[in-house]
Length: 188
Image (cartoon, rainbow, N blue to C red):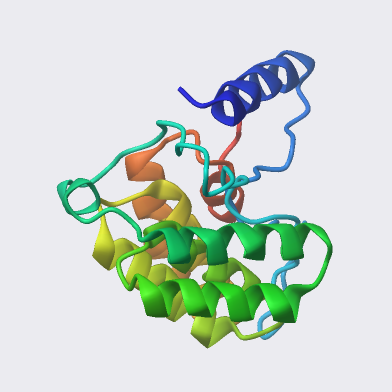
């Protein structure tokens, strides 16, 4: 289990005991009300990548495809640079780095997810949805990706699709905070 995942679980558990839910770092950040046509504000992208010289921590589900075709170092470097640029709030440069990463490694799922989040941040919702869909096509189903697709669908006014994506996210992870919020489920 990665350190960031363990830290997230501990923070989430502490917040639950205090009955205050922290923002979920795996998703686009959802305001209390989201008007159609308004891009969702985003606080962060998929948790930090390790530097390319460090091994990637074991976390989440890894597909057989990912094991058979490891991400090239150049793509890892571009994604790591994008994370640093995102942290410095240099979003256009981060987008360019992630676009480079997915050109080098079209099956690099994390890069597609992060690119989708950054596209949504700058209002390119259709591009964001396409990246989230590519991420789903690459690997096994993942609740955070379905939830992000749901949020992007709300932003484009496609509420029926948004509901279907949110329900799929909850089917995969009943505790998914973004999907629960979209479907107005009690989080306790």
